[in-house]
Length: 116
Image 1 (tube, rainbow, N blue to C red):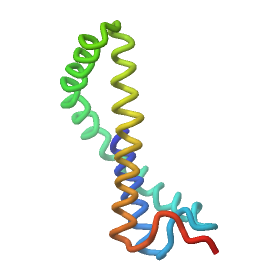
Image 2: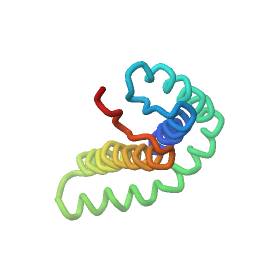
Image 3: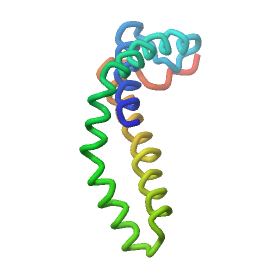
Image 4: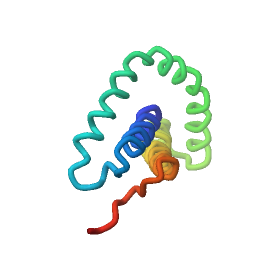
């Protein structure tokens, strides 16, 4: 899921740099989705590497689950749910937001287009 956040940021940068517009500008979403579709196809080719990376981070997730379980006295299922929420929802959203912000800065295009 983290990789999709990175690819959204990369697509945002590429689209903004090429067009000089934010994907949030009126009428630009369709064009942005076309750029993102290219990254989505690329994601399928790097799937084996993503799988290997997920195996590599699994011990860290297990440690986080154990820490939550120890500190909160919750069962393992709830502890897993908390870690998944924090990492996959909060973490990915934060990473994607930061990526979009940096992409916009580098492209010289504001994230939110000015009101006309």
